[in-house]
Image (tube, rainbow, N blue to C red; front, side, top):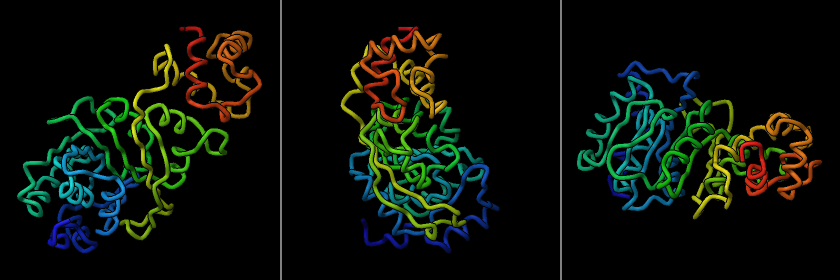
Length: 288
């Protein structure tokens, strides 16, 4: 990091001043909590392992706290922002604080869930303080849409971080855990206190690291087919897979056949299965 870090990165006073000038009040509807601590954004960039040749995509940059730290460390940063006021203001913040890097920054004014392409070179990393209310769908959409993203570090609600990183058999293992594991090796990468945000949320936050797998699980089934099995298996958690997958397979008997063919006990429950197990079941499903 440069010796002028303190001038470049946004502190609590900078954030509040910027927000006041723009007439911005963080909204719960969009899950907005702005990071006001420069040490936290430095830590995120460090934990993400951002390299000088990285092309980083950031979702929900807000007022630009993390954006500036990323821009100092990476080759390029593309920020995706849905909020009209924030999207309009961010390029000016970058220009004012990192003028020599402004040409390395791009802004996409859009809902991240609708983004299908990004300007410039393909992204190699995703680093973001994700809005809490859409964190999992946005993460899965970006990983699915941009296969060049090798490394991801996201800050999410602590409970969501636990779910994403949960192994099979864990109490909180579920749909997000399996779908994230389809794309990547997932682990918790730290905790973030409430006082680094404005406004301070009433929940703790956690960092989740996702390193993309060399290839998805080997299967003849499509990702969509595998994810359909996952969704069905966890729709009624307490049911055995024979019962939970009856609707998906057409009947409980057909579900039992598919499960046996995949080498999975019909009496098992979704929370005990690996992503590879779900892929095997999908291969023997009604659409296979």
